[in-house]
Length: 299
Image 1 (cartoon, rainbow, N blue to C red):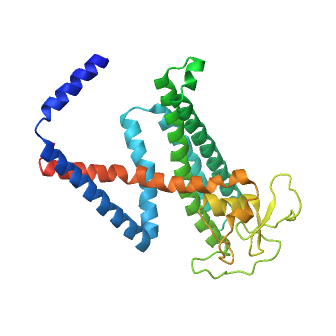
Image 2: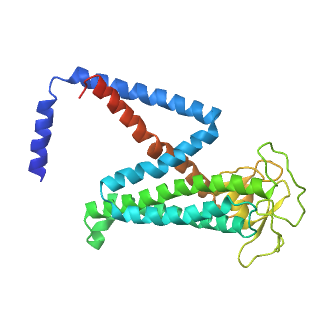
Image 3: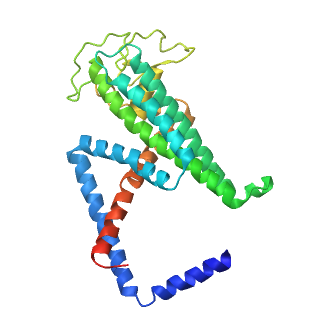
């Protein structure tokens, strides 16, 4: 196989010999297109965030599906189908009017569970890749290519479903909060919030802030409003809402999360934002560049 690869490599060099000027032109087209596309996406996101997020979410859902179907990656397709069915049901529950009392907690618990699973899978996949680079796989007599494929696959699964989960969570969070009535886009509360009511789900708070809960604790933000643990974690981290659902005061995550092991989750969310651009828009931009090269007769 190595000799065959060398022969193919030599043939490719012979085929493209003397095309340096054309290759430089293709690289220039790629760089200019990437810069212009980035500027257009930034302006679109600032001026029309709803349409941008909707299109990005659709492409995040469709682009990997197209490539994995073409490559017959049935394992990914099966997990994608299970994720789509459950998330579709959760989203359906979140968009019903009137909103059932149990729906907000069901929605937040599902997306928090998905967030934690994708985070753990991504970290494990990254660890496998790093162990392979350091040769630790040889201790277990695993081939480097097999270990690397396994680690990269897990890393992709974790990051991809982490991105989709965040986007769907944000959509459900906005819709449910506006349905409950405490949150509005203008920033003015539409109901008076009682001291023992969670502004996210609208349900009573049974555990005091100073008490240790059996299933979940109660959190108090810097603005002195209290929330269920699952609700405010989903609102702040999974739903990307860095403010109080009721008064719109910015949430101090370092003060809210006393456990230092939970702080990297915020950085993980920023990584997912970057990956969203890479998965959703990069294939579209590369396809556009290939179209320009084809029109200009560049190979």
